[in-house]
Length: 449
Picture 1 (cartoon, rainbow, N blue to C red):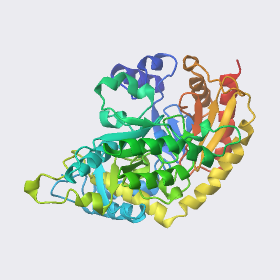
Picture 2 (tube, helix red, strand yellow):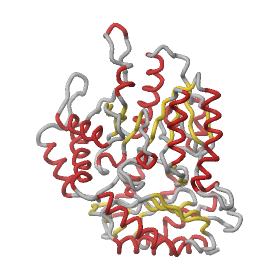
Picture 3 (cartoon, rainbow, N blue to C red):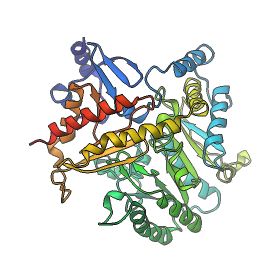
Picture 4 (cartoon, helix red, strand yellow):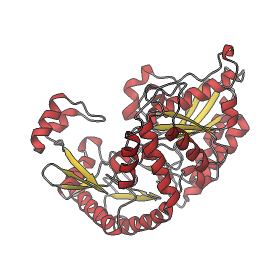
């Protein structure tokens, strides 16, 4: 059955982030029949532990009874309605819940369809705000090296991962780029905090130099996920918030991947005790069930668009499925799990178990670093440990890890030569031991020559 479905798929389906020729031999397509908790099962009964939450979206496991019920109940009432001029209770309740748990001052919720769309909304909203305030010269954005914010053109422009961006460069707006503060770059004896403080200096210099034309600066708080799971200290966010206030530049926090408990707090910005001007959310927002995103803003930004019709100051951005009732209902149920269960506290226990299980990998001759922020743990593979000489990308060591993992019941999807773990929060401690133990075997198999 697996082979028949895979053949039908390859005859017509074009998959994302994939060289489709790989699926003919190097990476056979795996049809999935069902999911339960952290496990996926194919049509031949083989099971795979979802170590990556199916691209970082699943929080509380596959086929979660609470979330299933939320979708089922909403389906019997309303699946969708135009969100211009009409509204519905799931969207209202979700907006109320999000603004209630978000960093203080984020009181308005603008819905979109996915993470990239949220970035587009935030970029347009920031630019349009300054225009409405009579400062139309503030049209540029400042981003970090190694950053990733999505793959629609606006989101791609404010990102910096060459693999995704370079080929489309002629289509993209120009941005300013400051050095990433990730702790991988720290000097001998330098702490994560000292590294972040040192690397903030060029960011501050660029903010000061270009303040007159800068609308906003956009960052992924604490973890640059698609950028090889690179991590940095929260002090950088605190310094950035202060500088953005000083130079009158919006701070846009892309919490699409790191929000909803991934970093050890509900939102990563909490660890720096800051409120961004705009915060983008998606992925875990619906617990991994349906596409939905939101951009949260404060009253000051909202008021810049609030005017008489003939002033033409309204924010004009829409999607046909904006505020989809099914997606809002399951997102509201997801937030309710956080409100009624000690999710963050449990995650701290699980994160500690992940760290303990991965400690054995630190001394591996081809592991340069094991790093962790909350429920995100990453293992950096290198050819030479002492010099950190990387493997050539053409050797595809990560693919070797992926393939070995599948033979032992793990769904891993390394980012280049970085093997990472971002499991659903319902994973058990024995499952964590199994996950990292098998991944260790996969790393050994992938680096033994």
